[in-house]
Length: 272
Image (tube, rainbow, N blue to C red; front, side, top):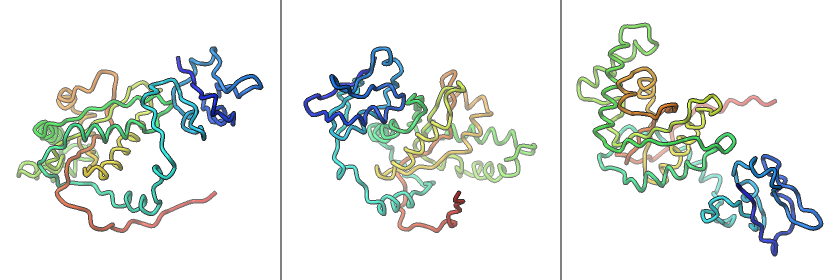
């Protein structure tokens, strides 16, 4: 059961921890005490850490993996808005990868960033499958092409487009996985209470964080379409029973560097 640990010597009893508590289970300080979670409410804590994160004096610790608590100063965490905007705008979908593999430790470091992605009720339902073997990535691309051969000349919405991809594959050009060395899947429970969007949120964290680690990414939409419809691909990936994989992500070291930012349509905002 979770509780809050307070450094009473330095606590100012500002009650911000109680105010920001998502579940409203922290009782504000009384004349004789400090903010606390009553015993009858501890089971309602879902360990989001808001109480700890917003404590201005850094004197509160949620009793959940306390050894992993990260304290930092405002200057250490601050990113110049213009630099952040430039960093995000320069993000590109990479379709030309070096054959050099990405170290597993580096991959884990990037996924660790996504561990902090938002999830409903702090459920953290996302789990990961990393296809690290380039040959298996190639096999996945091949099975995706096999699925495309089946839907060719049918009423499938993609039918009129797949012939180009199939022809390219038959000529030795991979337009499915673009010869990427690795492929990343995020999967969540199929239970309706768990929104599959949470896997996309986590993958987006990976997508945005990866360039800072020197890694290029690209969403593999064709693989997702095949995975949803083609049993041989499902059998190969062995996504655990009761879980659903979101759109996977190709990644690896990019063959080329980004040197400028192309234009985009003007923003379209409706103010109410």
